[in-house]
Image (cartoon, rainbow, N blue to C red; front, side, top):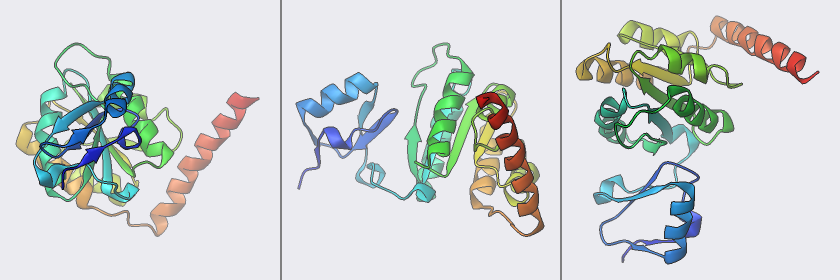
Length: 207
């Protein structure tokens, strides 16, 4: 049976992957156009599915990170994860804070539990993402930093520098980050202190 895509299937942003020959209603196409969502035909095993947040990873990149983003998406699929790609979709100049915000908001909202942002060095995206309450973004550059950021700091957003890592190095960092669980225990008390600082300044800002 052919996949039928209606307006309710269109995400708020990014892209929707459908099976070859899928029937996309006219209302769905209009909704996608209004939201800037790309509808892509992909192999059956890469079709977008409703997945729990822990199985969904948001990913975004500016023009400097675009190629690496496209390289790493198949890695995420191979790990059994659903990908929410928020752009960019071509190598035209883009501002990394915009992409970091899109990814961070998806994670902070609970739509997904992890996010990845890629720019030239990864530094700016990390700074921008960490301005969003609930985000603990970590710039990782090797297996050790990736493991530590998850095990000790419970990072929920990974930022990568496309001009500082080779594709194989970036993949190694990504796989390690995805595979490493938060250790909890004594580290939880420190995460609680990070959250307390965040809440303290959020309260001041609201006064």
